[in-house]
Image 1 (spheres, rainbow, N blue to C red):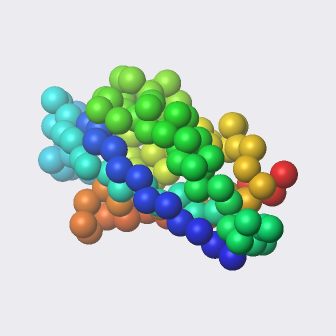
Image 2 (cartoon, helix red, strand yellow):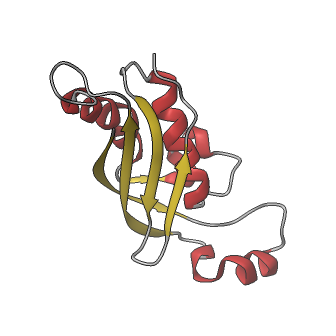
Amino acid sequence: MRLSRRYRFAASHRLNTDALTAEENAALYGKCNNPFGHGHDYVVDVTVEGPVDASGQVVDRQALDWLVREHVLARLDHRNLNCDVPELRGQVATTENLASTVAAMLTVRWDLPARLARVRISETTRNTFELETELETK
């Protein structure tokens, strides 16, 4: 059985890499390379999977919500992803890298009986990124 819960947060970022010149960054990332950054209202879906327990659920939804709120949303909401999130320092703050970071934030603290199966982040109505995870059930 799978369960997906949806969460929202707002954050800013700038797509830029020191490995490229200013001109190459501008050509690669376009308006997302704005020196002042830009923001998104992100939508994050966290999917868990496992057997249905005696309570009739795959996971305690309140426990999952607490985990995501405390270890992901509290660290990302209304933050500059380039400057305020240590896990993204040294990386380009793409949503691909953000999805990996969110999965890592959850994995380090995961203590739920269901397996973390997927992290899905929608950056815009046109851009959605999914990461299938390999975290095993405890």
